Length: 310
Image 1 (cartoon, rainbow, N blue to C red):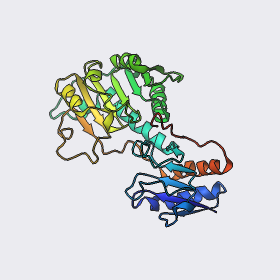
Image 2: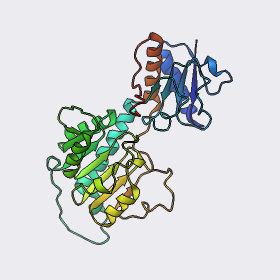
Image 3: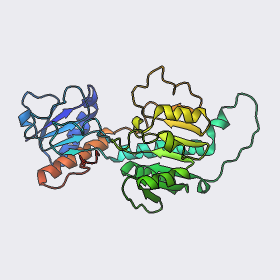
């Protein structure tokens, strides 16, 4: 019988207990799941989300893989004690939730809904938005979540451009890559969605220079990682009227401090990191499948490339 250590923040195990037990049984895996262990050398797999209790992976000498419950792995991938294979989370619930949040906010800005519902006095200003086919939306980051969002927006007939650091090909999406490609994509983007992983190369990617490449009045939507944006540069661009609005779901410090200028800025919408969440039912099936693969000697799903950071 395998030993699986569930190592996450307090309270999360109760949400995963039944789904993970069920998923392991359905995959035909005989496993004992524990939340603590005095014998790390007996642990076969670790199901992990960042927590203060487990920061040293050295004692887990038998562990075949660390299976993250998060899509982002920047808080663990640089841990020098982690020598085991690391798999990030990609699951259908996470993807569907992100697609719904992104398309909802893109449509909100495309249709000008804030302007329409926030009038303080009687108004009959008939501002008709363009059709989606006449609006260019850029998605930066074309991994599983970025690809799904780009395809959903293209399905609504937006002109969708995609950018990634390395070449990608997605049917119906005008894909570009590299430094020159980023400028080309940003210069024609009326709405930009950030879904990049956070790495040394992407931190503060949206700085003053790159924000300056956007057309006047463009909208920035960030459900990816807070540190993708230079906060001060963003506020300056909004204050100057260069950018029309920023809708932000992720931040460098979370919860967002009460005195942060984003809260009071009239051109910023703050949502409390709710764009998408790992769903226990679908995530448990991904975990069980990776354990099945590990026992069968098959390649793991969503294996992290340590050199790239994701």
